[in-house]
Amino acid sequence: MTDLFLNKAEEKIFAEIVKRSDAAFDPKENMLTEWRGKNGYHSRLEECTVHGVAGSLEYACDLMCRGKEKDVQRAERILWRVLSLQDRETDSETFGIWPYFLEESLSEMDVPDWNMADFNAKRLYYLLKEHGERLSEESKERIKEALDMACKSIMKRNVGPWYSNISIMGAYVVMATGELLEKEELQAYALKRMEDLCEFNLKHGALQEYNSPSYTFIMLQDLAAIFRHVKNKGFVALAEKLNDLVWRCLAQHYHYRTAQWAGPHSRLYGMLQNEQILMQIQRALHYRILLVDLDTAGLADTLPRCFFSARSHCPEELIPYFVEETKESFQYTRYLWTEDEREDDIAASYLTKDFTLGTFQKAMFWNQRRSHISYFGTRQEPVYCCMRCLHDFYDYASGLLVTAQEKNRALTIFGFGLDGGDSHPDLDKVKESRIKAYDLRVRFEVGGAVSGVLIRREGNEFFVEVGDCTIHILVASVFFGKEKAVYNVTEERHVEETGDHRETNRVKCVDIVLYQGEETELDFAGMEQCFGVTGFEILHKGETPGKLPGVTVKDNTVTAVMGNLKVAAPVKADTMKGFLHHSCAWVNDCRAGFLS
Image (tube, rainbow, N blue to C red; front, top):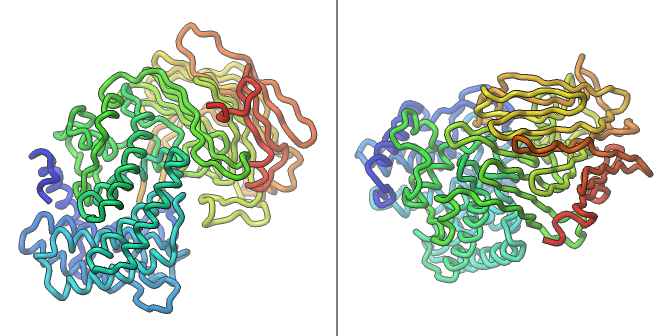
């Protein structure tokens, strides 16, 4: 594996990553310990120390790479401990997968995560393929059995091509295992799956997990592993097409001045790109650009285990996007075409040398989704502005929005779904259209290097000064049942936590407070009117700000107009599907995104 290190500094960083894991190893259980925070998915455990299955396997891979005799012995002990936790009962619904933690069996989990067949199997395959000569024969045979069971689970689940990262990962695991075990049925399944997901995504012109920093490099790492491990030439050729597709989306959204990844993002845990993503880019470019100083103190603490297990390659023709000043560009992307065009997924993204603005035309305010986000500043001091909906100060997945964007301007109507999720789109559905809350607000959150950011209010308009740019936020109309919305400028230190992801940000905000007070039950179905209209524009100094959007309500539909932008949405809370059907966005009286 040493061929994956590009320089001595990377080897040093790798050694520090493994040393960090050494300190978390529990020799009694032969697993790594980790902290499980709040708001995690699938598990009922929170705010406690646990022994993680996936993390322990990753540590075993890193130990084998470090390669000392004691490392190999420890890796095998970890391996056997983890293998014992796989569901081996052939008639079990969860056959072939693993729980998250030693402390919680599959039956005790909130909802078992079938992705664990894919994630853990790829690490097992890596151990066998890259370091099998140092493993005992018994260990190698046991890994093969585990891989075969994991493949059966993957094939039974058979995720579709729209689940981009797992679709690719599962295809890789099954093909690699099929070649290893010389099983034709596995290879045939994997090739068909890769053909289908390649055809689907190329037809739509983008991955369905569109522009997702948190998962793009998981996909690129798995594609890199395909190039390294898989023999089937047809399978590899399809992987090359996907690699080009993924890198093209990344390149077209990369902002040179801030080193940020312009929105909108289908899935992103943080707000700003971290060292892990920037390191991946500079490695893929063979350090033609330096985004992260490898001598930075504490850099290894920001990088995950197995970071150096594979290295992606960026197509040569895309490299100028990363090494030259960003040129002005504006594009719509219809990344999901459906039989009913009202359900098409459309993204708009505008990049200039000074800032970016990206929005989804129709989306939810999920914790992982950045449906309305902009970036400013410099690589050293980046700033973001993100529109959020917060239920008790955590992102509310049943908050909805429809947005029309043209370049630096966006017009939005936000509303609410009756049958969506609370903190997650699917795992914690809202019951009977009601939630208990002591606070509910829509927020324009400004974070990052905010010490010099100033916000001033003029009536229902807010001006956010960010360097040479001004964010102009216009609140035209807000109705939330019998509650009277309150507009505030706030500043706070906000903790973001989702399971094992935690970060603390100092933020400055423009808040539209829909409810605040004693915990009460909010009944969305019982509200006659439940919506808000906001305008948003990014101006350079000296540019004239726009006027408040005009708002009309007729036949249970609210329509807002701001210059050549127009949006319409239901006046009342609607079903998630109903909001898609009854909302629309136009630019110059044309459906936004349909003529690009």
